[in-house]
Amino acid sequence: MTGWSAKDIPDQNGRTAVVTGANSGIGYVTARELARRGARVVLACRDTTRGKAAEQLMRDQVPGADLRLATLDLADLSSVRAFVKELPEDRVDLLVNNAGVMALPHRRTVDGFEMQFGTNHLGHFALTGLLLPRLRAAGPGARVVTVSSGLHLLGTVDPRDVQMDHRYRRWIAYGRSKSANLLFTHELSRRLTAEGGSVLAVAAHPGYASTNLQTAGARMEGRAWMERGAELLNRLLAQSAEDGALPSLYAATAAGVRQDDFIGPRLQLWRGAPARSVRAWWTRDDRASAGLWAVSERLTGVTYP
Image (cartoon, rainbow, N blue to C red; front, side):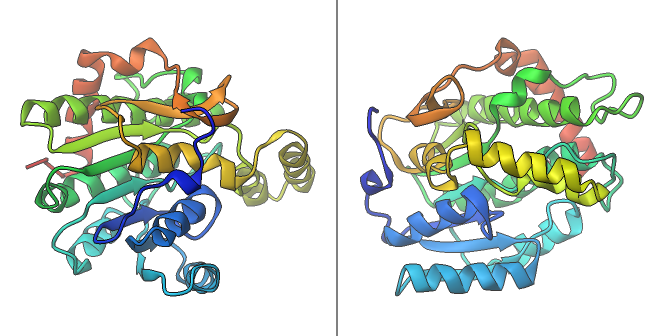
């Protein structure tokens, strides 16, 4: 895997990709590079205005790109259902569950879920389940890539309090939502393998990449000093969104990727070329992943076919 870059992405002509959060950061780069290699890319974005601006910029950077902008708010299950219902494609070769929020003050989704758990995990759980028939229709080669984080090491999901209703701590809530992404991938991989494995479920993380995730919480609370501090750290320590997207792109397209792989930067969960990443032991726990799956089906009302 040494030196793997976006230039190594194989030809994607004839393939359809759905990328959530494609209007900025690593989601934008992921969508753009898939389009550059010939994929038809659905830009699934919450903010239509920002989505239109990103689509235009992407067309400027990749002339002839096959793009379609669609509205998707992962913090609203009715939006997830509407997105799937209105999606004209009868097959999806690649779903990149990229969108997310990080370290927000305590907020609730439209459906009453804690915002980080609801957006980062439950929204993508519902989306993947509703799109699974179209992923199966794509046949061998279809993949689900869910973007987690090295900060999943902050903690696993507490089955007694999955949404941290009793004591909310923003960074622990973020870490747990990212552990949920890995537990989801683990259980989905197990189920897909049992049915023959035509769809591949893998996870990725960008390391420390400079995106607007780091500043969103501070901006939401009006804490200018925290926002400036996050921007400074991004400039000093973070790798670019271009590099941060490489693990997602590798997980989505490279040969040799296996069920339940976790792809991240080679160097200490931080930066470098894509490689299989270390992960917490609890993210491979069959009992925990099955338990989270059952809770997720109950909360979302989405039962996997």
